[in-house]
Image (cartoon, rainbow, N blue to C red):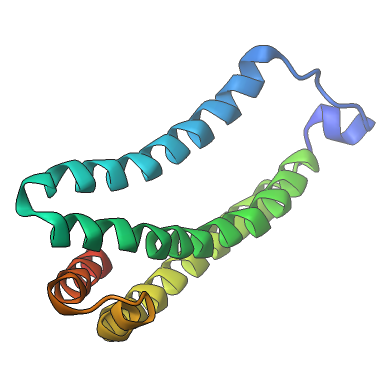
Amino acid sequence: MPSSAASTGTMAPVTARSLLALALPAAASAVLNSAFRVIDQVSVQWLGTPAQAAIGSCTFVAILLFAFFALTSAGAGPIIARRSGAGDVEGRRVALGNSLVGATLIGILVFAGLALSAGPVAGWLGLDGATASLTTTYLRWLALA
């Protein structure tokens, strides 16, 4: 059943509180996404230059992987918002469920692809020797995470 605001064609005013309720989780997600790369760098600083180079080289790969999930949320967000604005609770539930299933399937495909192609990815990054070996290992662990 549509909400009264949706049925009258008016929209409730946007308050600072409602805006922060939407913005803070998105900001926290962005910060945490960047934080794990920093934590990885700090964790391997004692293992030498090849380990640092391997983690640093994988930063761009991790950003690319994150982009697949950002695409899903960028597509799902407006659809879910439209359904919410129209007071279509069932449509919103279906859209949210579809986006979660889609993100899960994309995750399985992307990370399976990463696990299988970790060696070639190290080569595509122009790495060789110990750095390439450590990059391959790190990417395979990243695919499992």
